[in-house]
Image (cartoon, helix red, strand yellow):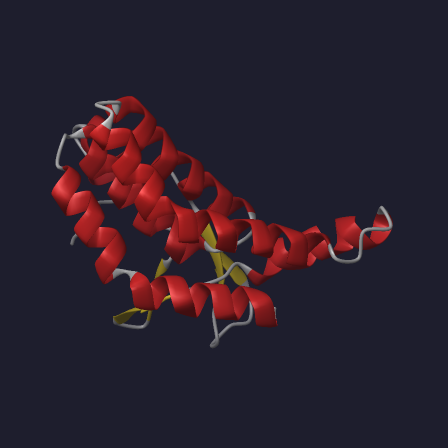
Length: 164
């Protein structure tokens, strides 16, 4: 899978997930934040691409908001809701398709994409971006396969969120 920087893209409509986000990564070498126009979970450090499961700054901000509002468990509540939604996704997606409601199937993937990104699980959000794109293109088998093959990413992301 290759991604083009915004200035290199001629037609941005084909892959909005790849160019729509700017991710700030903390580099080991400099210790400074740098802006990288790549999908949020792909960060170029030296010559290799690495995967960022979580945006720790976003998680810290959610926890700060929770503490300020007296909801010290706010992040944990969000993680539990996400875990429930992830567990329900295969059945929900299939049920929408069985009813012939492709738009609802796309919406289910879109909703999970946003939920993941809002609580700092960017790699998982990118997985659902790809699932959503496949569903929009009518390639439902591919969308289901992506979710099934992403089970390790789902498990790793949920565990990392629970530990954060």
